[in-house]
Image (cartoon, rainbow, N blue to C red; front, side):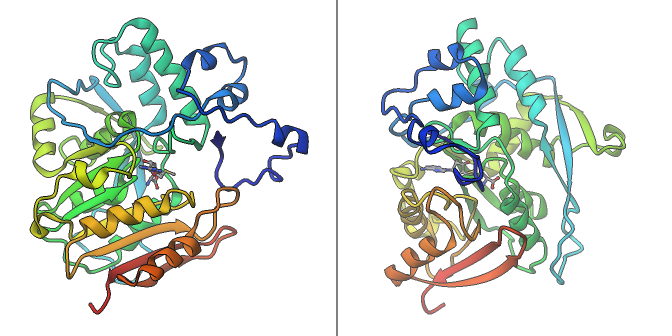
Length: 357
Ligand SMILES: C[S@@+](CC[C@H](N)C(=O)[O-])C[C@H]1O[C@@H](n2cnc3c(N)ncnc32)[C@H](O)[C@@H]1O
């Protein structure tokens, strides 16, 4: 079922009849339905939910990932609202423009979404992408990673205003999408390592990785940026930028169920010092899987988790309260609210530490 965050069915002004007719077909995702649908609304309503994408490591190399000749990026100013802002922090981040992703899919015969695919597959990817960018999520098919959600910027703001020592930290961003919180850590401390996970491999290849590059080896120069903050960056030396990135980051795609095995952590020492996650607790049915990953891969005794989220998500049952109740029932972590934004939809960041730390 496709879903737009922050809207209940009432907000969408649908009649009871239309709500009851909302189709959820539990079969394999059939792209043909998308191609035949007359409008995007119809396309998203007709997408059946697939059961599950199995988690796996996406091994990136210059051979497996073909970058385009250039990236178009937008500028994100980090204006930390917190008092302790560090002078060593970057004051801007860059993220790939959605139109640029669309352009790559349209132009690239050797699409990074699938190797060796034919032109009909490219067409299908374009249609799938259209639906993805217009829907907040399509349960079990696409979980929202193409967009940058506001709680991820809260998390960047929080990290930027906080004097934590991230020297040599091993970090995991779960449900990363654009990956800006993890990327902020990469840009602030060269010795930090950050691994990224998203439900969709396409998001990792088309959004997360370009964003990492745009903030590290391909960071725009002042002359690349126009007066609207839009930058065009040429991608020179494809091989070396990918190799450099892979020295500091690994990538995982697929469901949280089974991710602990895919991360292949062999000892306590290999676990993560810091786990970041933003706008990932919107679905009550998924929060236990997410929590299970967190508690199994966070390093004892000093590991820290930062969960950035809207307090409530209408229509899908998730949010801070059910997640916090789940964590507190387990008695493994102390939980504290460390950041709050009181707009019309309240947003919070929870910090979790092992009990007694
Ligand atoms: C709304 S997006 C948020 C993306 C990004 N963190 C941000 O704040 O901009 C939710 C993310 O959670 C992840 N996600 C949701 N459900 C998941 C599941 N069952 N297994 C793995 N990842 C999931 C997806 O990868 C998706 O990118």
